[in-house]
Length: 98
Picture 1 (cartoon, helix red, strand yellow):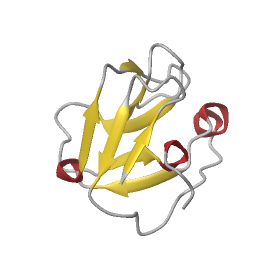
Picture 2 (cartoon, helix red, strand yellow):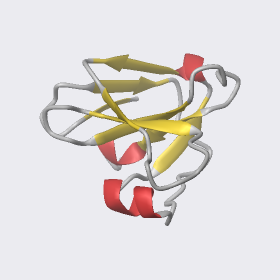
Picture 3 (cartoon, rainbow, N blue to C red):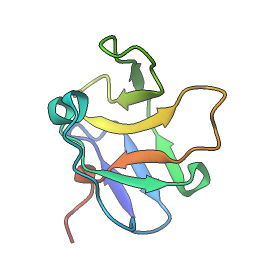
């Protein structure tokens, strides 16, 4: 499955449909508009440049939200370096609904 950001500068390829899509209601996800599908890191390929954002409003930051620097679309979140065992979240809103 392939998804793209609004300006088409970033392409996301995932190996399968996610088991479910999480519409998180934390303050960050509400503002970035993510609908997260969870994948192992080796199931996701990104083409294009991403910019990262770490939340300044929580005491223990545990992930980096990555987005397209051109159109601002949230693409994925990844665990902080050193915690590669965790899954990544991919914004399934970048994919065609079908």
